[in-house]
Length: 274
Image (cartoon, rainbow, N blue to C red; front, side):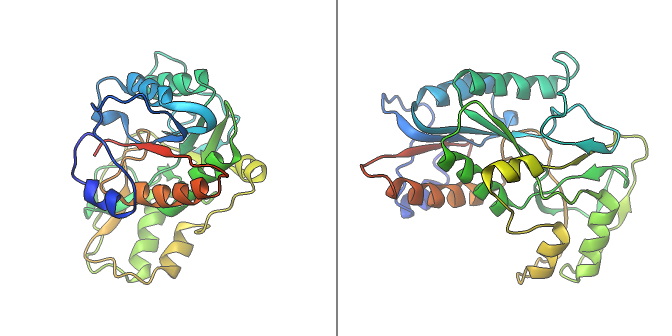
């Protein structure tokens, strides 16, 4: 980690955290890199360092983004959709170069859809832009499934297969009655459109299904009070751009279970920027 802010939480789970600058020759059979590029000037370099801590036995997984898929007209997109050419966008260049490092080490990439958190009531974006969603718990379970399969050099896609427009998302939020602050609306008209993700190939190969098959299903099942805010999309910029430690804790606990199934002592490492 970059700071010690969440070390106590990790220690309470039996995890031994250390700072990024800590020098160690220790290698691990399970390594997952789940941090966004916005927190570092050398994203590919950081991923290379993470890969060097993998002993090549279990799995090395990098949580990327669906942004590299070359589709921005609200059209269909799956695991086989071509990627944006290098040089068109600094944002996708960063992600594709990072993925290249992972594949050079024979690791696996999981390109994720949008993650959601509490946000504001008015958004300067167009309402017809298509979003693709996946719950934090499902993103974690998909990552762990890939780790446990011990696959090599593969790219997978994480989404719930129920793409929605921004307006549809907010209509569902308003109808849920779980927020006491009313969403005011969208003000954008000319920003880019999105893509309709489908990860049926990933599901079939891995035997994985999400706990929450759609955003509407999640809203219907959730018993937690969601307060005065509405949900709005994250910057789909790669990694798991987290505002808290939740995803790391979920993955860490699952990884502990994976490691305990091994016939001999083993370990794992999780890279994040908090």
